[in-house]
Length: 216
Image (cartoon, rainbow, N blue to C red; front, side, top):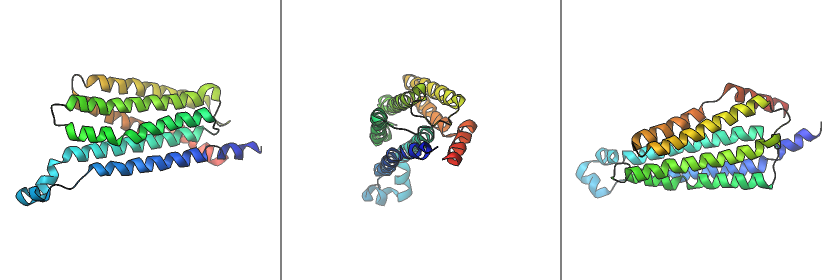
């Protein structure tokens, strides 16, 4: 009976550190958005020059949403994960490494989305999110193995559902990367669609979160 509060606190420092990293990354994304050249504004007008940078705005919005979805899913995972060990911290650190790199492929796709190098830019962008999906898988699989780091209240059906959704997501992210060979815009659209899929809360996971909050 006295063990529950201890396990509840065991991942708090990991979560706090992770939240700080996510917050910094979404802040860094805005640095890709810059004011247009004053001389061009004088010649063509402010709105016209701002409109020319629509790829930068799109890349910023897409990456902000991607990072937001990653943070949401990270929070959902740590609703289930109650205990920590050295391997979990290393795997979580690997995931955070993946997150901190996101501004770089974002700047690439923003600069080359309308360029002949569009295919390479989208490949780098979607390819990195595929790698981040692998990092999520590693974190999840380690924590889920024999329920070693889970709360005692976790329903096995919930873990099976999450495992299935992660497996499907990994395959579809890989498909998005491969489709880039045929159509970079379609590849990018699939990747954004996957982010929407992982943003939608699952009813079973919601129930688990509610149960965990009430039993904490």
